Length: 225
Image (cartoon, rainbow, N blue to C red):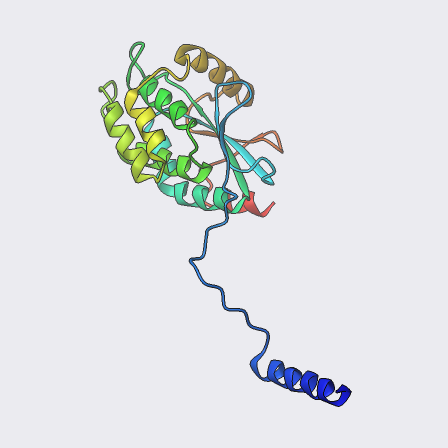
């Protein structure tokens, strides 16, 4: 009986040596459930996209009607989304509305939609894609009506956001006191650079530095530090 057991063990060992250690798993591969977070900043006036422990963290001061802000998204938006998704980058978007001719204008409505998008379970990567959609479809005529709530909801869907988020945007409910947001974010921008308070301005949080975004390699250099 002892000899039989030894022989059985040897036979199994030979089979493993030939076949290797394999396990057949049925079903469909699932994506990692840990996705980059999306939330409103602690002060209430920014939208934060990315993991809290991301090694590189920046703030982007942006105006929805600013053509240079649109250029920033065209040139670097895909890289922003990539780095947010990998956990390497966290972006706080701080909207401003100084190009509006009055209350409730283009930039105010888009800013409100951005804050509505921060509720309802979207990811940081989806939010970045939504920002890109908004700037790709930017109306270059200043003072125009801007996109409707329904149009922005469609952009949210194109960015991959959940239907619940798109519905919230379509409803157009007030998500932020835009005037208070504008005052607060302009104050933060003034602290970054009191001489040049234009948009887009990109601020490196860790190094307390305004980034020269007209250096074509600025993002690559930032991610390597």
